[in-house]
Amino acid sequence: MTSFITETFMLHNETAKSLYQNYAKDMPIYDYHCHLDPKQISDNRHFDNITELWLGGDHYKWRAMRAQGINEYYITGDAHPREKFRKWAQTLENAVANPLYHWSHLELAMYFNVHEVLNEANADRIYDEVNQYLKENHVTTQTLITQSNVRLICTTDNPTDDLAYHDEIKAQTKFKTTVLPAFRPDVAFKIGEKAFVTFIDTLSALTQPIRDVSTFIDALEQRIVYFHSKGGRLADHGLNTLEYQPYTEQEIQDIFKKSQVGEIVTSYENAQFQTFLLNELSKFYAEREWVMQIHFGAIRNNNSQGFEEIGPDAGFDSIRDQQNLAFNLNHLLNMMASEGHLPKTILYNLNPMFNDIIGSTIANFQNEPGIQSKIQHGAGWWFNDTKRGMLNQMTSLADQGLLMHFVGMLTDSRSFISYSRHDYFRRILCTFIGNLVEIGEIPNDPMLLKKLIENICYNNAYYYFKLI
Image (cartoon, rainbow, N blue to C red):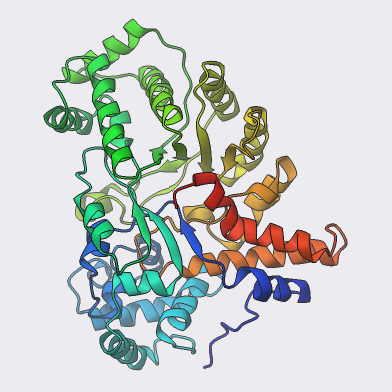
C-alpha cells in the first residue's frame, strides 16, 4: 500500500500548503534540547540494521508494543533484530491515530525512501530494503544529522561528565553541526536519596571537599564554569513537581546534614531544598547569560516489576498532577526576579491542564527591556509532542502571550531520526496558522506570515539562545 505521507500530509487548507512549501519546509533545525549521545556523534557510529536505529532505547515504541501484547523478549530482550522489527510492524499496523503511526512513516519516507505503509505482511521485505540502504549509503549519526539540516545540537549532560566527546566533535572540522553540552543537575535535587550521597562523593573528587551546603554550591559553580568553558550556555532541570517553600540558611544546612548521615528528609524539607537550589543556580545562570530550562510533571517508574527487570526510562512513566502549581511557580520566579537574577527561562509542563497557568504566569515576568519573551512556554513534550498537544500549547501561548516570539520545537529524543518530528510540528503549525487566516482571524499578509512561520521554525531560537 502506498504511503499516506505526501507533500500535503497534515496540511489541511490551501494557506497551510503555501506556508509550508514557501517558508517552513526548508528551514534549518536548531535543536536546543535533546538526549542524543555525544559519544555516538563523535564516533560517527554506523548502524547495521534498522532495529538498532529505530527501536533501541525508544520507550515510546516499547509502550505501544506492550499494549499490543508483545512479549518483552521482542521489545527489550535478546530476540533477533529481524524478529523485533516484525513485532514492531505488527504493532504499528494497530497504532492508527497514534502519533507513532505518523512519526514512523515520516521516518521511513524521509530517511530511507520507503513510501509505503509498513505492516506485518511487508515487514521482512522492508527490513531487508532498509538494511541494504543503511549499508550502501553508509548511514551514520553524522550523516543523519547533516541530512536533517541541523545547525545546532545541545545534548543533556550530568554535572560530573568530562565533556571529552564534545571536544572531539569540535575538532572534526568536516562535520558542520555545532554540538554543545547542556548542564542537567537533576541528581543535585535528590536530597535524602542514596543517589545524592553518591553524587556528592563524585562531585567532591572533581572539585573540592564538600563539607556543607556552601562548599556544595561552590562545587556546582565550578562545574558550571567548566561547562561554560566548553561552550555550554543552557541548563535543564527535570523535576517531578515545581515547589516553593521559604527557607532559612540554617534550615538548608540542617537538611543537607540529614541527607549525609542517612536521616529521612521530609517532603516539606525537600521542597525547601528544591527552592533553595534553583534559586542559587539561577544566580550562576543569570551571571553568565545562560538559559534555564525546567521540565516538570512526570511520575516515573510506576511499574515496579518493570523497573526492577529493565530499569529506568523504559516506558513506565506517565503524567503527574500537582497542587498549588500557580502559587509555587509565581513565588519561585518572583524570588529570582526580585533578587535580580531571573535568567532567560523556558518552562515545559508535562500535564496539559496547566498550559494556561504557565501562560498567565510567565506574562508576569516579561518586563525586561530589549528581551522579547524572556520567559518562554516550551513546546509540548513527551506525552504532548502530538498534534493535540502541540495545538493546545500553541493556542494557550497565543491566548496568553506572543506567539510570534515562540522558540519552537525541540527534539527531546535519543533517536537520530526523530528530526522528522520537526517536520511534523511544522506541518501542524502551518495548518494552525492557515486555519486562522482562512477564517479571517489573521490577515493574509505574506510578510507577516513569513515572519511568523520562519521565526517559530528557527529564527526565534537562533536569536534567543545566541549559540551560533
